[in-house]
Figure 1 (tube, rainbow, N blue to C red):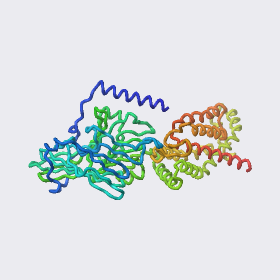
Figure 2 (cartoon, one colour):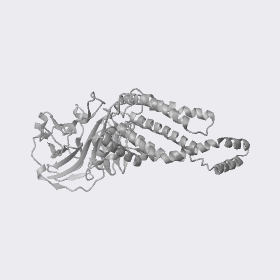
Figure 3 (spheres, rainbow, N blue to C red):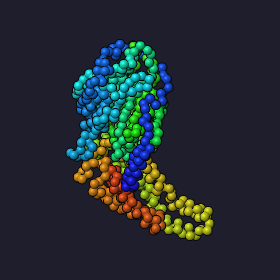
Figure 4 (cartoon, rainbow, N blue to C red):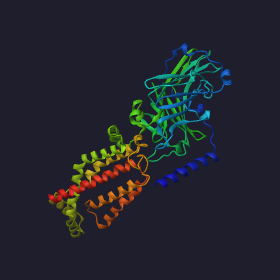
Length: 528
């Protein structure tokens, strides 16, 4: 299965690159973004924002400089070229398990055109590649503190732009405030834009177990765009936008609206094979001397449910738990709760598996007992089918009478199991997309619960326990069907070879508990 997925991804990339080379697309311009509907905007007379800055000629003659900001959670490098972000490294997350792992760099660019959080405009004159003046050469922000980093630039046409980043020492979020002032003699109208620039990683995957690409919460629903679709045409969103970003399985880069600051978002793929989320403010009109302020919250960090929820704007919805999210989230919180005491996510998974098994014991007991009773009357059912083989209605009546006489419910064996299916899929989703399991060790050779078992020990043991469980389970099937069912453990073993070891651990422990439960039920039925 994994090989087929890999081949499909490689072919898609080959077609994408081949198409780009054979049929070059014209450069998409920022000015082509459809302006959002006009909104009534309150203007504030702010003379302090209209301060003297070096002339454009003097700025153009200078060189861009880097400004390094350091916190306990990350190190960020800003550039005075456009007042942009060119690099951010997370300190508590590594790209590989163990001592060989290096700190994760969510943004790492050397080419100015690829820097993120660029400012541009439609209507106003804003140069995204201009050299801004900056109020600091760099600083460190400790826990509980916050500091401001200001970039300022003015144009000959009478536009002054100030970008203020508010850095918090104990948060992955950065507050961003943009102030646009009309320093000219004429009225100016337009839209201020912010560009979230994302590099397409060739290793990025889009599948049922991996998430990779742009995502936006708009019009009260999550909008996930596939890269193959963006290669054909851009996407425009302009209804009730709470945030927009770009994410993979474990990390997110996003811009959150503050006070309805995002009026529209255009998501497009550039000819240089990058994804741009072009964020537009509401329409604004500035008379000479007036200032327009727009605020955002910028997030570059892990897809941790608690951290995302603390940012507001329903950012936690970027983690898609599917249909059973109402169950998956409590299970994930329970997993984190037990981790606080065990300090081992593998042990926490085992505890949750035991608890679920205990909770469902009455249902499983009833199911197993019903299958045993069905097995006892199986010879009589064969006789009835042979006796009424030419009269289906009579056979059905006789079978129902047999069920009634022996007080057997034919659905009793499957209904209790069906009830457990949502819980299983919810736990599957919680474990599959949980960043907590990323590089989390268990015991011995399993040092990353989010990765496959490197020696395939647990999947093989899981297959053996599944075979034992199948042999112990009462069956009403004919011999041929029973042999086919016994092949399932082999199929599941191969399926689980490349599954995260955390999921395999859950299934293995569940199988062991089920075997013990069936032994107990068999003993109790023999004694009764």
